[in-house]
Length: 390
Image 1 (tube, rainbow, N blue to C red):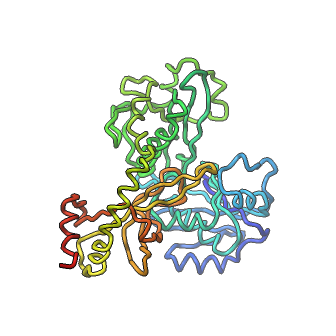
Image 2: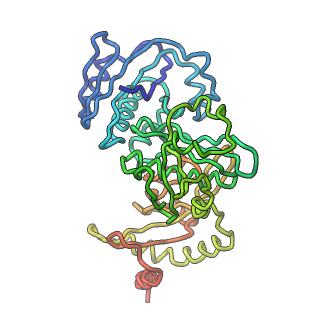
Image 3: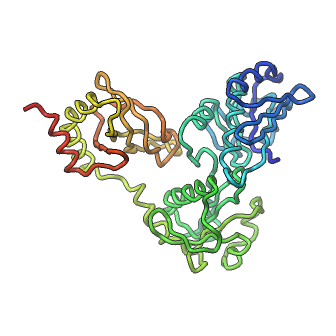
């Protein structure tokens, strides 16, 4: 078994096993106490998670710069008096299942005691509210992996970008070389896509030319092969990263991947203010008819109503406005309650599937779909015009 998670708690005593047993059984999860009366084993979804309680303070060498997480989470980790250690076997058929079961175990423990979750594989620290969101909302690989950018050579493309955290899914971490600062966000988007495929056991085969979601081609090669033709990078650059990776290279096996990332840059391009303002005026003009059609929808309504509005994210302490789409669930007194159909690209502050509230006045785009097909602009106009009073 591989130890993947720790729950760091503020008190030295464990949660009473009877309390935990009742909580796990209410979730239809099999619970077996350890002979020593501290730890326990949980079985669910054909997965088995072993949990061991250990009374000890957080090691002095665990400084905040070793982990990523919010300031309150990192502070809570340094104050920990005891830990629950979570271990499980990875699955080759459904790699996300044991991870989800372990996270559910951590969530139940955190419902009974103040603490934080530490992902050992990715060096992430999550507050209990984060763990609840991760287990409730749509899967987001950014909750499970960390991407690091390291300058390993000189020049315009000095960066080596690699992941940490994929071993919990039974997969190698990924890496890509010879990137510049302008490539960082596109590389993150690409690597997150690829990590997601691997996490679900659907990664591309090795040494075979494959296409991205944007149509560009690449190959994945084991790092022990790919690094043999990596020129100019000193071996000491890999100290502390001795594990085996999967390296992203061109179809010819070269480390020139700038063209591969070109289409991903468009995801981070700032929409012109004039375009956003124009879209906002048009959306507001159609909003009364859009609202009227939504409010008279039937129980078996085949239409799905979607709106776009601005949301603030805060990557690295900066404020960035992202335009996100949400499916309309209810509409009252000028406020739309919806479910995000896409998550924020810069951070996980707004996760896909999260319920949000949007003011009518902030809506800057509208969309309708029928039975999974997005309606064309002229179809939307025709449908909404039918809602206008004669």
